[in-house]
Image (cartoon, rainbow, N blue to C red; front, side, top):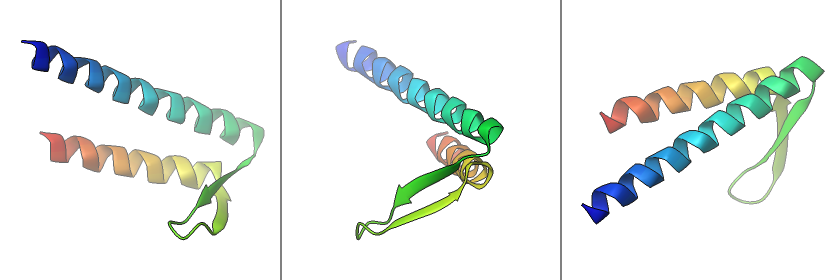
Length: 68
């Protein structure tokens, strides 16, 4: 029972983070801003917020399908 409750809390936190990232990217789209990311080696790169949101939603959908 305790483990199930912990998994439920973890899922809620993960979903909350997804919502926060999506809202942040939508706000950046409205403002016409770019997003800064870093590769694993530490080098930075930018992309439009629209491209970042499309990438984020694609990854989120793939993760959701894999979880089922």
